[in-house]
Length: 414
Image (cartoon, rainbow, N blue to C red; front, side, top):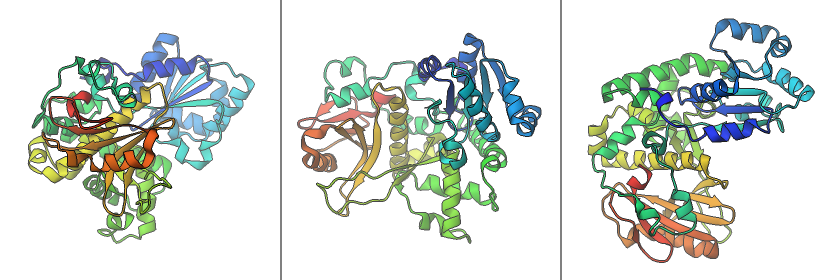
């Protein structure tokens, strides 16, 4: 099974962008489905396709960037553009001569916004679409409405049209499967583990060396495995550096590279003048829980037995699902976490305009009023800005727990 069998909800974003923007970049981690998306749309609209995984094309582009771009048809897909940073200046010059919309579709497995020499070259000329691994909504083929319900604080009839279920041990199976199309198409956890292992080898041997000079490549798999064990926890470079005989600044540099290729990301802390003693440290999340499970060496059964790790990976799973849904939401959403020095916390804060919603995550099938402690603190602090607070739990019913506070089944997102 491959990603051509799944609808990508970002397809409409790509088609819209091509109507008014000269260059559209689809970027995200390798194997998340960028090439398939670009080629499906490109085939429909008559685009010529070039990949820089082809050594001959790569060398031609590096040798004569200006000549290479001038030789291209009006509508071209350039796949894995991070391998040829030399082309960005040539693309800019070409677009400045001809601002026609939809001239180039670029795909990249590295975040060029974090590569300073490239970030400014196409400003005002390029729209960027982040493609993530498959969301559960894409895998199962339903249209998500969660944010509409969340920001209207309305989890009544409309939200209850679907039947929700207690997931139990199948929840750990979803977490371990993750969202990479090629991985979820495999029939067993053993086969998925082999795919994830080979995937990491490819990334370390190819993608990382395209964007950075790493002296200790052998450390990266171990560092990433350690990062996976720390997912959904406060980011601590010292803890991550301690097992290695390498300086803390070097480890931070390596972590930045892992962020550039979309394997880890930081969730920034939320700030408010109305609350004191706030923790100002970001949280770290692995970008795919299937990959995280493979890195820490657990299958579905082992994860279900390890409740502490299950809680961490479930938080990352739900965070990533929400980020995917946010990519298609009509309004721009910003994500944070909240924690103070008294250990009152909210796992995820989501900001839409002036409105703020809070999300707490529990792996349990029961929920009590004490689970809303952090959300109530947030509600008091932001007053009329507070849209709603949700505790995700493994139950079957949407339950009110006070004004604009709800317990919501995890299966709402499944």
